[in-house]
Image 1 (cartoon, rainbow, N blue to C red):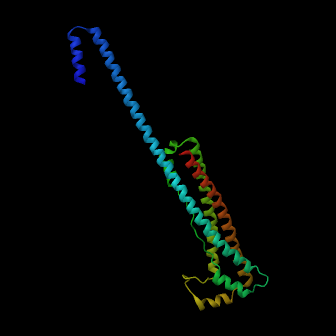
Image 2 (image 1 turned 135 degrees about the vertical axis):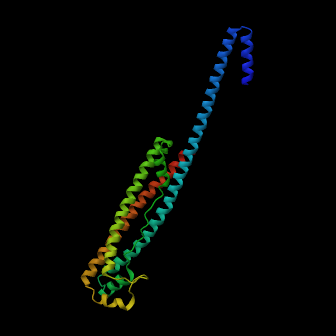
Length: 246
């Protein structure tokens, strides 16, 4: 093609048809410019398509993270609800007007466990990738604001739960240091612990057991309240993503 245009230019110059050559040269320049503009337009369209594909990939990944959070939160809530029933039952027995100290010792030694499930995590990988790469701008302003607000609420819940778990863990370790409980991994088991429980101060045991059990019940209710609120918000964002991406 270039050789073809070069031959035309040479013919026009050899025949001293400068005016026609000038018109031809201008036309050729215009064609080149048009070609460049078309190439740029195609390149821009390709870039836009790539960005749109990347945006869809991020949105799909965020949706999967949120769906995983729903499963995770529901499991955590269910587990705490089950344990709350156990703790509430213990509380009712310990609060009975005819409960004996022997029964309290039995509950403290063989039934009550100061442990808890420390599970407290959410799927934040996609959001963190969006922020670290600056690709959060690929999302619409509305969706970006929604996702960032939700992430702030996720972090707030995780930090609040961690704080409560640390408090409960400290109380649990202190309680076990004073009152050895009957578990599989106890350093000393069985009859060797009898002498300790035979000399336990009644009021001190009641006070310590009440403190840990009460803190556990309050903690579980508080944590499940936060988890349920976040669960509802997570489901709503998933619904909004599905609606917007149709």
